[in-house]
Image 1: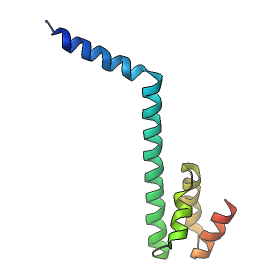
Image 2: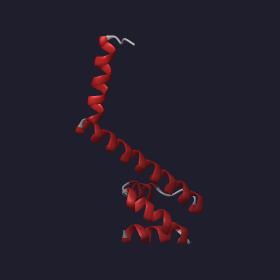
Image 3: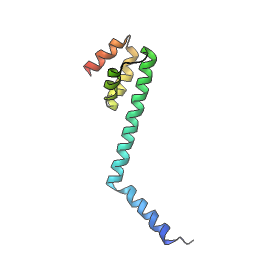
Image 4: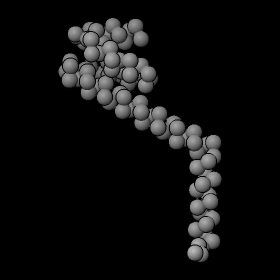
Length: 93
């Protein structure tokens, strides 16, 4: 089987690029951002379902949370009885 030289060069460049530290860092950062956006979206949906629409200030505070904090909030909100519980949690975390 014979391949064109340009195809072989392109395949080798892609492989080298995928192994580069910079490329891997970019991919990792993109995955982390995607995970954070998904966690934030899920928590916001859960809070909206439980308490209705949240004011802009609360949305911004939730938007500033890390993935770990969002995961902790997702568990904590199962025990919340009011939006006041959310505010207390945000103040403490």
